[in-house]
Image 1 (tube, rainbow, N blue to C red):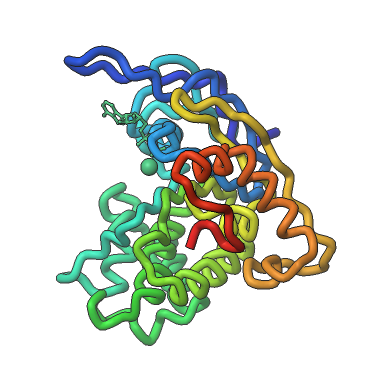
Image 2 (cartoon, protein in one colour):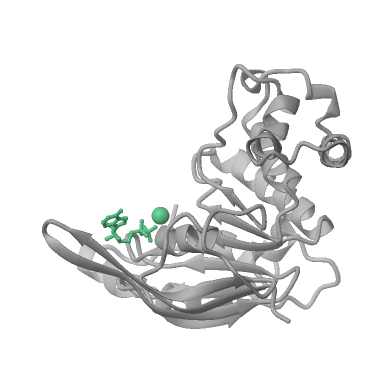
Length: 269
Ligand SMILES: Nc1ncnc2c1ncn2[C@@H]1O[C@H](COP(=O)(O)OP(=O)(O)O)[C@@H](O)[C@H]1O
Ligand SMILES: [Mg+2]
């Protein structure tokens, strides 16, 4: 059975200026351990989609099931990582990692052990009593991920989670996050505006249309190699083909023509 079922989601926002239809019939499912990337034009409804899946935003129509159970409110089945790492400076790293469990009143000895084990496994035990500002950007993201994984979620949602990082750190963090997610066998759904990142991380890339977002294409990503990691994908012969496919589907050629520029080697930089 699919771990995540997203069924015919439709979202309409009401405001004093009228209605905004953000999502139109979004329908897909994920198997346990899969990693899907989501790309789409700015403002098309990507964050709306994740907010609904997280249980924080009730959908106008449609429903979300995790392990067969309908999600109607935020739950420990779902972990959510945003752009800001949201670590609290007055708490130590360990206290930050335990925060999600505290809020959910799940701070049992077993869950505390699990959190300590994650800190240990992923090289943060030595920093457990430090405060966030004493860590590098990459380490902070790792701590934020471990805090999210400490609640033992079935699904991990990432909304442009790395976009505040500088390029070098971002490459390191994606490598780091990918390794941890695969090792913990977490099912992950990641929104990104970075096409290479969507390819490097994803088993599939969901390409969304302009608002109201519909799924234009579900693009399976396969590399002919034994053990892929984000960095090694980038030098594979298939990579450019995937890039061009997504680029075209997003209508970026037209966008560039309108802007009077010419498509270059790395149009996003
Ligand atoms: N709370 C809200 N009320 C009204 N409109 C909203 C609200 N949140 C988002 N929108 C609108 O819905 C559309 C999709 O927003 P969003 O999901 O944030 O897009 P994305 O993450 O793809 O950039 C945008 O036009 C945005 O202005
Ligand atoms: Mg967004």
